[in-house]
Length: 255
Image 1 (cartoon, one colour):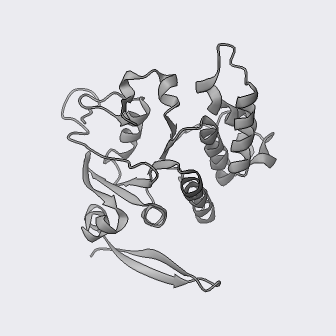
Image 2 (cartoon, rainbow, N blue to C red; image 1 turned 180 degrees about the vertical axis):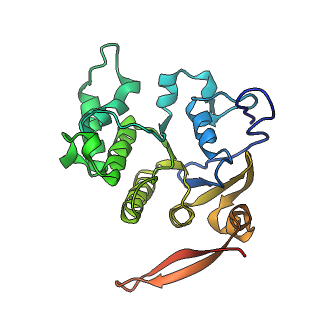
């Protein structure tokens, strides 16, 4: 696949990446490497100059916006918070299934209720989004995505501006959705520690191309992450208070 912002050399060229069903795949890479552009191409917000985006065997470029929204749900970065209640925001996730009137039917209301409960924001349903904490707001947005009821969820920098506890709380919810409900998740994420802890697979991008992709252990063994970020990635084990062992990674800048 190739894409260019206007005339000149392509910003993305020769890119080929696979997001396996039922897995959490993190797309990582240095700033400006094309991660968020890849999300916009998947969402249909941008059109590739060459190649295509295929979801479940279907070229998304051949679909209407509503048809595409029934196949994949995209949570993009937004600089503005809309003046909506949490419940109204979550109801927006049912737009791809609505009729001409735009009114919610019984099945839509049931989906909204289930999404509010699953994301843990039922108690916030009447709260103004603008008055929520960053973590609460991201859970509300995730509830909207759940109400959309797609097998594939695409997240663009979902932990930006969140404190460390909110980051892990949100990632734990994403992993639970994957494990319990079989949701396929592709997320662009800048935090390498979170990507390594919560992902099954990695796609490492560099200068508009895929440097490496595969299972986390395979990509780390190939030193693709370390080379892209000039970091040494060292496995780490920590014993939890309950006696279990938690596996993680420690990152060191290369000198």
